[in-house]
Length: 181
Image 1 (cartoon, rainbow, N blue to C red):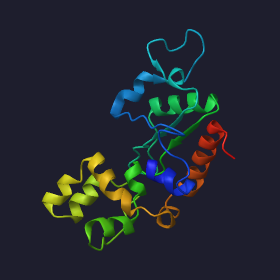
Image 2 (image 1 turned 180 degrees about the vertical axis):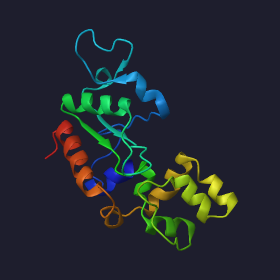
Image 3 (image 1 turned 60 degrees about the vertical axis):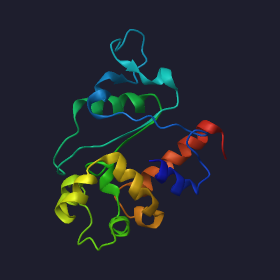
């Protein structure tokens, strides 16, 4: 996400200065709420108490066009939007599905035969196309993100799913929070 923000803002918006990413994993989102009504959701962590400016990016985890979004994601999305904030549910299965073929070609020094599909599991995709020792190494999301980010280019990303719709909204929201014109 930081790389996407850097590319769409031309490097003018910086993590730690204008915004902060807080990562969560797996099912922890079931313990989060953006519903601030008195007496509501008292067993949940109220994310708006951390900062009233919040934006959430969640993987859709959809395996096909016909799959729905789970109830917890729908609840959080509704709560965040009801508070005037931005919630981005990925159009792809995960944020990794937004990785352009050109970036994979550059990272691995080879020509990938096809773009990672919208609902493909990126780990299965890499395992299928890379030698075993390399493919299993890149199953780790943090390692993969650290290595691929230098090969991400705005002109490649703009063509993928809803990137060119969502990132301008992200940038506008961060600018609004920071009173940047």
